[in-house]
Length: 454
Image (cartoon, rainbow, N blue to C red):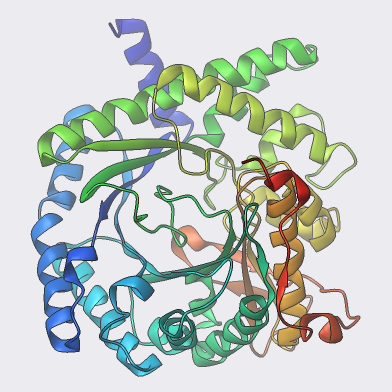
């Protein structure tokens, strides 16, 4: 039973410490929409999404009003479109028609984003996979709600370097096609290693082929709550610190569990997972970097940052799994630069570099996320950045991702404004030395020896 103390405590977390349910994401399988006729395929996709998710936004608002818990986003994820459109789409342009259909369906049901314009190519690319990837710049430039992701590596399969090379070019092309909006299209494109099937967070969400016909996944977030809790134990040892983070994560996850169960019951769709991720926003007091400074660092990026982030990530997961039997997705701490005012401040102060962010991704939940880089950065350098991050995920048996934004027309020292949850970011310098010969080798980096466990 939840007692009155817990109710008051939760109200305080919501009103003063930026606790929210970041997203209710409905996963929808489109495998039964496959059709050799492109028009029929598009119609089936539109009909399936609009029928299944017609009440999602309304139910989310009902729960918000009834329980007083802010639900920031209502989203949809779908089966990777490279699979759904394989029979009908013979060119990148054909896939763009599906992107427009997804956009229309998202607009119809009123969600914030729809994810799943995706391909899974960790070992190789089919013709459909390649056509979808090549369609991404056009798809993201002519849609409003569509998000795209490509999984190019895994611990079991290694890294598909042909796909990595291609994605470097696609990121650049997407930046060019959306340059009037500060290359915003790149903010909706994520490159993964070990992508989970049940991640509710955009831009990387898709509905895995192992999932049910429809599912409800919920992502909760509360870095402000964790920071506030830690402010009361300054100077205490690591044992006290860890216990405080763990107990706070438990409380945050309880809120998500309540929302997930209610949404599942009211929509008549099974509950999937709670993703307990400390996902920051540009709001003051809602920053993962501020947690790191509360732990004892002058700025995120100072010596000790990786250790502090590892501790935070681990204790968040330990607290979360006690509050829900179905913790999944990414779950842990996110470090997106543009969405975290503390991270922005650290970059501006010179405390945080791209290389230090890469080191931090070894122990956090995602990877190099929402990082603005000079628009003149070569495609091969972007591919090299992707390859490095994929290698971290592959070897460490964890999910890693890259969402970098080469802002056309801007350079180091300038700032880009994305708005909303995407925030703003200083343009970060990139290592100027070339990796072109490495990227151009082609083929596949093999899986590490510890992947062989059969």
